[in-house]
Length: 211
Image (cartoon, rainbow, N blue to C red):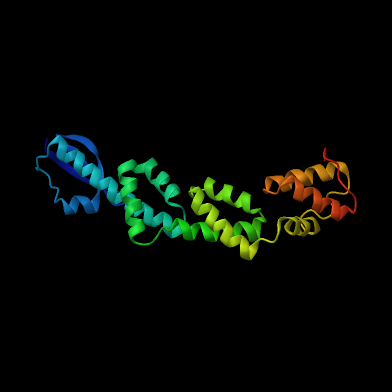
């Protein structure tokens, strides 16, 4: 196959024509590095290699752009890159970001756990679940939640009591309100026994098992 035209395109891409037909776009820097030129002959294998190298370059550039906007886990970053550039390019880009110390799942998990405790008032169990949902492996999630809990999370019943005085103040004075409050606290990861004890203390009356 012969390169018959090279057309500049937006986002630092160039469109390559092979034998008079558009073959696709490659990264501009890659085209310069490979010294692509009109009239050059390339094999199918060479063209595939060019496209793969271009995908890797584009994936790394996109990874830098994403991480400049917000921090994320390795898994989340890899998933986003895979959607655009394929698994091989995504893995290569993630590896490069790791080398540059731009992604650190343990550090991300610690900061995220602190935020979930302070702003969302989740229980330690719920924090672990949320970290895992965001792509953190379970051991790292547990360690981060346990570490942050020492500073930001009081004992479960104390945490619930505080929530009953703030977020749920005046919302559990009747049976329907108590049920809604219980459901909300359970979604936040608190156990029924702790919820029941805190509500009973707040209402100065025992609660039945059905509540």
